[in-house]
Image 1 (tube, rainbow, N blue to C red):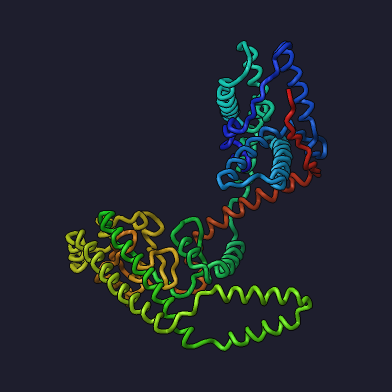
Image 2: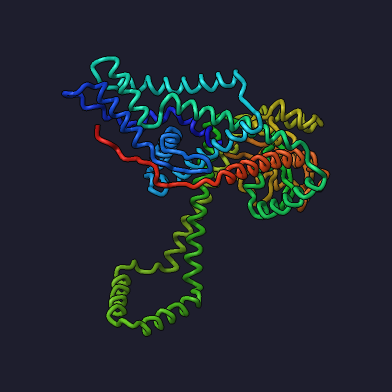
Length: 499
């Protein structure tokens, strides 16, 4: 609902107002403001949309436009961007379409004999009054004028410049309430899903999920950790796991992460050096072919002067290039890097030992209970510190993990995939950036389409919701089309007038 954006951002308009004030020297300020109001009404009389039986002016949509413009301006500013003319044009189009939509909905409510009850109308009025008063109070403090009457009228004018009047705010709130009423009415018209519709939805979902999740591991894992979507197709290589997470003191845990990070950097450096030595000892034939191709291109160059200039630049670059390193030099660096990797590995091992020792008593207690055959789910409840294991759907499902998982800490993934059989529990707890994990291999995930019966009930609810939404959107568009709307983008007069 686009009205929701207006409601949420209504007060942001205050940040966008430019208070020029009136030139009060030698004139009656009240008379001057009356003239300004008349000019403003004329300025905002431009037509931004026509439809069968009526038209929409800038005045009708200015409040909604300004609120959304304010919101977008601040959003763009947060990212160091400026609002382009295309963005403003798109906003004008959106606001004009919204205004026509409001009219279409109002006509439908009337034709269907629907109406908002007195309680809802009172709520609409209260919301509008509250928003107006908040904006009014914020501006009144800075209003110019020697008397309260002048300052009050100046504030009303400054608000009206931005489309903020008591009437416009009421209409915005009323349009939101009308949309909620008609949408609920239309949604209530769809009460069930037939077997054929449900099977068609299932087939479509299997196809779309396969397309979505075949290689997108992160998306699949997120979907299986959420109740928002029914997944009907499973990718290859997945298993489910549950775990007991024990979180040690932050300094102990961060020491492990720091040591691992330093080791990874050193390992990467060592790998680069080995690649450099390999490239020196085994030059690729492709380099010779590339040199030959470049020579051929140079010979075919139409502009000899440019070719000579390019050759001169290449020669200059070669002169400034650092001399190639010898194999002996690279090997010396490899030996030094290997020594550093060995030392850093010791640091990692020690940091991990210290981390485990810091909570050893608790880990021993958990392990003893596991070995005694106590229920793992109960132990998660008693000792686990991962909210995901306390909340659905992961409390029941567990986490979906494969060797190529992207959503989980790589150490957690490695520990989960190292378990050989369903029911196995990690013998040595796994340390990740989140803490220490005791992981149990819950199940193998059968790849491919999930059996229809397994998702039938959940898919029914999802399909019913989709059908309700589609029904409303289709009907709404038909009401709008029936009005034959025509839009005048650029119909908004955004110029600043001198007072």
